[in-house]
Every structure is written in C-alpha cells, then in structure tokens.
Image (cartoon, rainbow, N blue to C red; front, side):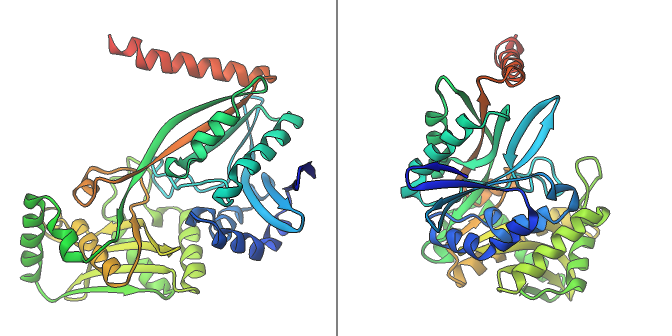
Length: 373
C-alpha cells in the first residue's frame, strides 16, 4: 500500500480479490456524479473472466481509511520491452473503431486529491514505461486534470481525440423532439413508416428478460449486415457470443438489459441490443435484416431507432448514448457528440518510453505537416 494524506493505494492483482470488491465497487459507482456502464463491476468482470486476462490485473484502489474512495482499473501489457498500464476494458465489440467510455471511478469533489495520490504512487513506482488511458470522455474534466497534473519533470502527458459517440438528452416530449429534426429527414421517416406498414402488421417490442432464443435470432439478423471485411459478426466469434450472452444474462437480472425488436408479420426486420444504466440507454449493437426485400431503401435501422427514441421518452430515460464510433446516419437524430480522448502518460526516466514518444511525435509531424504536400 502507498499512503498519501488520508488516502492509501492498494493494487489488486488477484481475480478473486477483485470479485470480493463487487459490493463496494458498485456502491462507489452508484454514489458518484457520472457513473459509466463500462466501469461497472459486472461489465469488467465479464471481460476479465477470460482466463488469458486474469493474470494481467493491475487495479488501483484508493482508500480513505476503510472507505473505498476511487478506482483506476488497469491491466498490464508489454509492447517491445516497454511495460504499459492501460484501462481494463472492452475496446471493441466486433468493430475495431468502437469505443466504450472509461474513467477514474471517483466523485468530482475528490478527483484532484485522488489524481495527486495516483501521481505520487507512479512517481515512487517506476517499473512502468507508459500509462494509456483510452476513451476518456472530455465532459468529465478528467482529461484536463490528468494532463495538467502529469506534466512535470517526472512525467510527460499527451492527449489526442479518439472518436466519440452521439447522444440525445431526453427532455420534453417526443413530438417536440421529432419536429426539431431536419424537415427532409422527418419526411423520409414518415414515408418509410407508412410504406413499411403497407407490407404487413408492424410490431415494436422491448424484451428485458434473458432469452437465448431471442438473442440467437438477433445474432442471425446482425450477421446479414456484414460484408466480413471489417471486423466480424457476433455469431462468427465464440468469444463475442460468450461475452454478449453473459452481459445480457447479468443485466437482465436487474431489468437493465433491453433487446428491442421491430417486426413485420412477426418476421424480425431490425433489432437493437441495449443496456439501461444510470437511466442512460446505451445502444450497444444494432442488427438489420438485409435479407428482407427492400431493407436498404426502407432504412429499417432508422425505423427501429425512431421507436427506441420514442420508447426512451415514454419511459422517462434521461439520455440515449449511441455508444460509438460516430456514424454519419446517427447525425440525423442529433448533433451532440460526447468526444473521447486517449491520454498517454510517459515515464520521463524510462528510455524505451521516451523513444516511443519520439517516434509518435515524428509520425504525427509527418501526418500533419508533410502529408499536406
């Protein structure tokens, strides 16, 4: 343990010890101002349960006497002899451009003190070369605070934007929201809803229980939209199937899991795998049945989003997060973007880390300057 004022740090390496923290972890997450789904114990536990990842735990827990005040969930990696600590999270759910959001788990009022405690720890324990904190939302001010505190004679910090996600704040009523969208887009949605209704009986349903048959139906539909040249569909990966099934089972126990289906005459034409956490609806994965005639022209994806947004208004959800990455079609529904950043903190006394930083600088210089000519 490392002490700093009233705080002390304990590193969790053992998976069983990580499991024993579940209640305190979740209590802390419930108590802070901006709890994130991807920082929840259940989400990380499901990811870490892969035996190949259990041995890389480097979870920093910050304690105020017997109270858990903060958590920085990291994993250990080695890249070309450089020891790296990075956020312990799922960076891709079948698409390498997807980005979950991660952050230090602590209250805003304690963040400065906790970051200073972490800074002292990393200054005294220099076996690492680089700390990589991926997908930190800028709105939480963690990016700014880490960058400012970790730039001195002991550390070099860099920040760079790394994608983001569109979001919708749910205020007022659905009709008012919809009428503020672009007139041409509104017209298209109305026309498509009418055309789809002419094809048969339309049904929008929201399932909140764990049903493996319904999940398999979703995976089958999701597979029809893949060209197999960018990532892979869920059903083609055993690891992804296990992960999605476990997440659905865990979060359905608290009625937080949602599988939204849009059907024509009981035939599934679109489906959305989503989770409600802290009253935020996270749209994790969409599936559109491209084997259905006319699916592209009728934009089944837009139609299920239409129904999901209406569902969010009707059920007093505070926010919809499109999860990421940023897709052009989502911009029809909202212009608000939750920008995420990657923060790299380099050990200024580690030669391998400094060489990596220099190479990174040269690449950015070439891309930004030389690449223009």
